[in-house]
Length: 292
Ligand code: FAD
Image 1 (cartoon, rainbow, N blue to C red):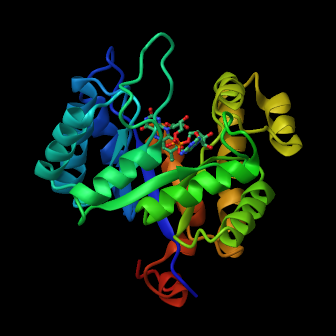
Image 2 (image 1 turned 45 degrees about the vertical axis):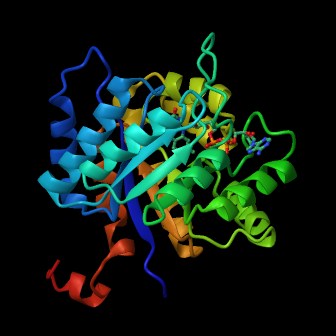
């Protein structure tokens, strides 16, 4: 049986948060020994590029974990992209997650890299040794003309040079498995990691559901209804829900799990401890003998 990938996502501290909070996050995630940690990228300003590169360097040098730097397309011209790639290179980054980026109201796109595939083709041409990941959407990207068109554009990203895909979060594994079938049928053959975000805050999940275009299935809706008013109970239920999602996906042969840590090491660690045997790098019988 193939070994599923296990990876995490963190984001640079918000502008009003102490820079040091990222070290607390990484300290709390270190024991998980993920295959890589990816670091998000803001709206493409200089400070975003620096923050992403700096955190990637810390992940690599301070924790000995592979880092994947996110980089967005639509507000960047060629000079900005080159500068970001150079910064990532100096930070020892050998893999990037290339995205179009979220739209910022009132901000004019640079008009060079309109879609993620434009950036992917550019990076594949100019930095042939970089590993390239891209995003995919089990429930279809909210701006897509149709699910079929979205898959067609996904195939374009892979044809342009993406070696690996990470999915948008979802709360119904059947949505992911159906998407996987459609992607494979369309000739998308690279590994596809399932994106999992634990439910910890009711308002956040509901807000993201409308902006990111994923649905809240009845089982998750029941959880929100029942525990939405009790932060601690919701967190416990969210940890159990995410752990169940991961176990089921791995049992169904998923290529990997990408856990959106939301910079919450305690929740992430709790989930990891529930599912760690599924990603064991040594045989399970040795784990049972307490050798892990
Ligand atoms: P694209 O692949 O360009 O697709 C966007 C839309 O355009 C889709 O509807 C697609 O069907 C359509 N499309 C694609 N190609 C074409 C084409 N050639 N012609 C016509 N239509 C086309 N955002 C950030 O700002 N920073 C981050 O760090 C970040 N990290 C993310 C990580 C993951 C794993 C995911 C899933 C998303 C992340 N995002 C991030 C959000 C992402 O930027 C948004 O979801 C964005 O709206 C789409 O990005 P994309 O790369 O999928 O875009």
